[in-house]
Image (cartoon, rainbow, N blue to C red; front, side):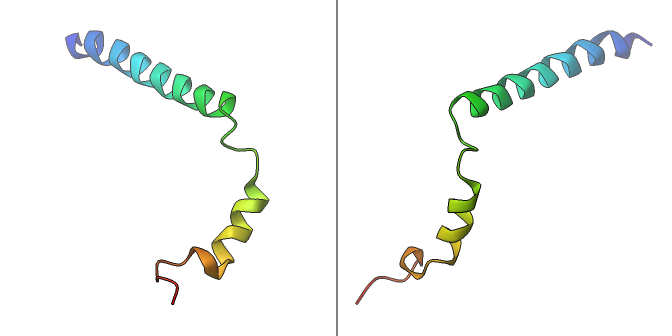
Amino acid sequence: MNVLAYLIPVSLVLGGAGLVGFLYTLRSRQYEDPEGDSRRILDASWDDQPKP
């Protein structure tokens, strides 16, 4: 049972860090253009091959 005294605070800290990271991505607007991202994936100009 002593292990729970360590595991519960550690899990709360890790969960809080994940929440802070998620809120940071929301505020930095990383989820603003999902449709544009899907179109850029299919665009041939973004391939790894160099242009001739």
